[in-house]
Amino acid sequence: MTSQHIVYLHGFASSSLSEKALLVRDYFQQHLPQHQLSIPDLPYTPAEAWQELQLLCVQKPPQLIIGSSLGGFLATALAEQYGCRAVLINPAVRPHLLLQQHLGRYYHPVRQQHYEVRADHLPLLEELQVQQLRRPAQYLVLLQSGDEVLDYRQALDFYQQCQTDVQEGGDHSYQNLQSRLADIVNFGQLA
Image (tube, rainbow, N blue to C red; front, side, top):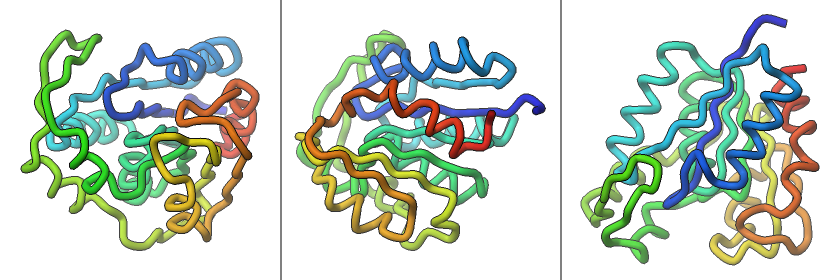
């Protein structure tokens, strides 16, 4: 198989050094080194993050986007734009509402920069909200009911036409992700 571009998108206040990102990176390095895996360290401001993602994807459109939490929200918007497959791990559904509770100053450990999340950033997230999925069969949604950050039922409702997998218990970090990586690769038609 020719080399494909896979993008992994981390969640809010996370980075390319998160446990999930490292699990994905290690799995691809070990099992699928022929593919190009991008794990960008996204800025916290939605406009800057979206601009970086557009530049990343226009250079080589992705075959698969894997997104966790806020990254799952962004993965949905990108998958709709590029018509590619997406695997969403405990995705945020309406982050413009959720982030109202998280306004303030943050430090990005990898970029070594301070960011401020402000109320005027939230309308862009609302604008990026996909109203209806055009190709629901191109989504695999992995949820754990014990998610302490997001109500998994919101994602279950929004992605109801997609292939969904709900595991009882777990948490927002998605316990035992390593056991699902082969399923993610198979869904992405990468092997």
